[in-house]
Length: 443
Image (cartoon, rainbow, N blue to C red; front, side):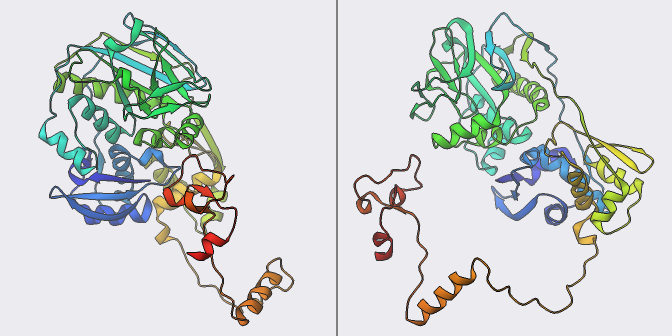
């Protein structure tokens, strides 16, 4: 996935003296790939390609964390400045303002707080500018806070009009086959039975969780009380729903990759501060936090020989420790054996080879030894599965034939009766599976 990060926002949390070009070069060598730097609203903005397994980097703070580890490898001073929140509400398992029932297999952490007497209006120009530079359209201070937190932390946030939640009750469960829900964009969805939904005290569905909120609980210009909602979901369910309904959102793209449950707390408290500052709302004294299975620190074990054999160099224990520690890992040595405690935001690290990869990229792939292949090129094998196919192609092309590669999809006008229709086609020209090669060859 590609994300946009303004340099001026990055520098709020990254203390360094170098400019965007140097940061981009260093990050691309050892971390997230910076495709290019563009000027948006007059400011340099990084276009960054984040791989699917590195959802921890899909945010401003995620890139800052990477930069603070990578830049020192190039003898550039860099320091991560942690965001500070003033909100000090106590987290509890039940609150007076919301009755909640949560399926822990679908929602790993469910957190919410009531904020009363909010004033809806435009966000400050500085916040609007950051959102625009990240490719997000400012709407109002409520919606902008949600988007701001998601871009900063990589943690989606949702807001409900509290007074539209019947009975001040939420039941988070799997959908029932055939249930329907109209989302914020006005689309009416027929659900399959594996979707994560929230119903209120009247039995209405008010949220297609992890995808998009329900139209019947949305915040509007008349909203006075807001329920601020921060959570993490089972990524498998989110992915299935997103693909089956062709409902893609920035939130779903994050949730489907498996978010860090420990991120919910900091994102919630920072969001509360923003609500107080921008809406003048009054937050409740307690945060509802249903977290039945808190993150347990895991460790990956390997040894010095395993790491160095795969890198083709001889790093010392101290070099390995410094590389891992800069990324937030906790290495502990016992002789030549190492046990590495993995931070909650790096759940992609599970096996010894993952440890080798982290050491390699911080050491620098460009610093690893390389040698050109030598020797004679091997002759192609005879009698392989593709040998007969290649011969047939050669004969046909020699007789004047032309090979064509075509899609397996055709438009409605080219499809025969009984052709299968795609549920989520890319466009009108690819709605049906073809039953004949002829339409494709005629194009």
